[in-house]
Length: 292
Length: 96
Image (tube, rainbow over all chains, first blue to last red; front, side):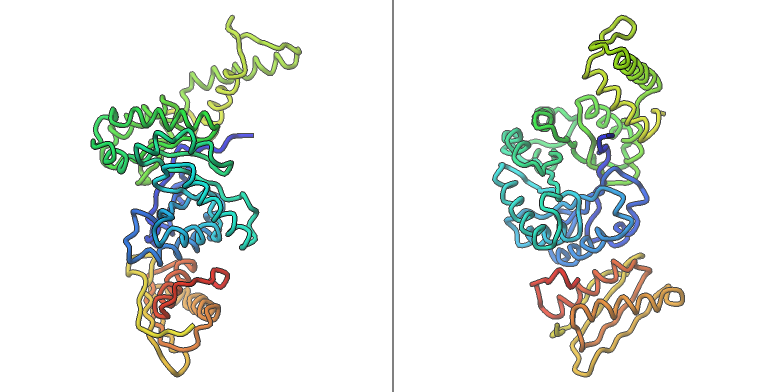
């Protein structure tokens, strides 16, 4: 079965009726309704209701939906969880996750709400956002803290402030990116990179996308629909990669037919990791074609 | 649910609506204006009435200025205005 692709995760302000009414047309891999930083304090109540109803709209049933809630230690967090779980969100993103206890606390609330509203217990997935030095240090334990976790994400804005630095060429995020990525891979879950705020700097954005793809991230959080196609194209394989992947799969299938444990292609051994990678390449080609 | 003070929710941006509610003693007084009233006026009125009934709102003045909002947005904005006007924070989600 094809693994769910999560190259693009588009942020939408939960308070914007216009954006909630149209965002699905851009076809990102996932849409994230933001109830936290993008929503002013006086509109938290109305944004929560907007997201609750938008989640139930038929046009959002065909796309993975994520809700970024407010932290549970605010007056808004638990109400956001109620709206997200009861509205049918696929994933809840917990901001400022510093320890596995943060996930435990959220998970127990989600399980209670799922039982109350008749949703299968365990059906709401979780994403932990790492935004502090403590969160990065605890990333391994956080990533393994719950079977509900489908991924962890690095969030740069708060992280660089906590580190007493600022966004620049990416070197300021190097350790955190590697730490979050290794934690995710060690736990068998996805890893998501930070947003790129300058939407007019396409060259800078593309450079960052190339970097995080090479590092191994599954995808990136996005703040503008224009960034979706750039990411999808960057993650699309080249024709050369597709041709090689097809030869690998063909060689592996031929080996299976002949009952061979190990097969070779052009004199090189083809083993399970190479075959798996070939499948990923072909999945990406099926999702977004060949790289332009 | 009883509206005890004037309240407002929403914006006049495209695809949104503004809902104003205020207390009243003699039943419901609902006014709807919409850019798409000719095509969708009946549908908007039906969504409004259904939403008010689910929240058991039977008295008050409800003024709606619609800018082409989807039904789900109309429900959300109306509920937000009612809850604010009723000074209620204890949401019964099954009724929304």
